[in-house]
Image (cartoon, rainbow, N blue to C red; front, top):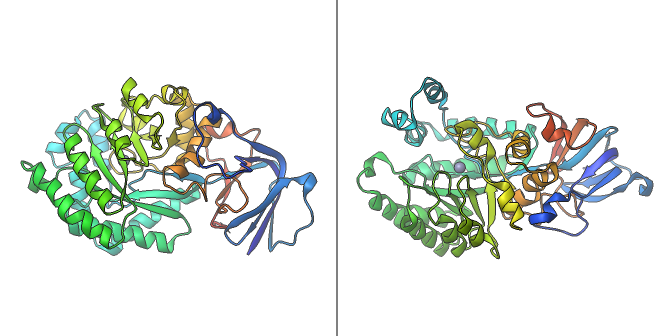
Length: 412
Ligand SMILES: [Zn+2]
């Protein structure tokens, strides 16, 4: 199968060399080619350039992109897309004035999602999750990280991870899997958190790793959830089994989780709504990607990650959705990119770098995804006719996508 796209108004995020991360002031640059063409063979970008250099090529499918732009598909490095049911009732309860604590006391929150998931069949869970995945692909996401964490028992976590494995096999999207073993303390361990961490370390991690069901290990490092000591135990155990850390940290409180993650060579630290100077310092000279999740801040009305401070300190930044039933029931990366510009004061160039190449880095796949480069995978967005790429974040809430190509196939 081959596809030729001609008359592209602007080909966005073109990286001649295989760049795998963009940091600090470089994030303000988004390299493009105006009036361009691009050729895909099978699932790979094989050639591109200005139309003036185009030599006749016989493709099986030709797309005339006159007036339209082409960019790499979004790389969403933080989601909880596999879940059962939803928590729309809690959403309404919150509007009517109930606090999180009150909702939790009524059996809401993560424990609610866990109970529903435990009582949902694997087939049903797969079908519900597949629908969400297909929907975000239509919105331009080509690679996605999916976490477990609504199981809270060895058995239910394995069920979630098998569903992710099946999605990986059946879908055109590229999927990376994270074992979020310590997402919340289950009811049975209410007064024995240490006992739950023991279970995670002694049973869950070895079982998951031996079944090769996860690439990464995650912990919700937060007051009232898992502290630094718990986090350290879990990351250390995960690493012994080859699971690289990618953790939830600094969402409501900053107490040293970022430095701990860096010490354990975490691939990413995610959330970062609360950042102290020492957290930024800890990330300098590290290989850890900071990840902001602006849709979560929007939905919960909590502070936004200080993207300016992070980028202006010379650090990279990635953007992801945090798609989950409780705090971000949306997997729309277009909204994330808009919100990053509007609320985090990122330029469109910074936001698009953060949502493509740096998002790919935060999944460990930026050598193959996240930019237009010969030999990279053909995951692309073709926009509708737009004036400039600034329209993508500017026209927030609008869908400016005409076509999505994932693994070299045009989605229906
Ligand atoms: Zn999350």
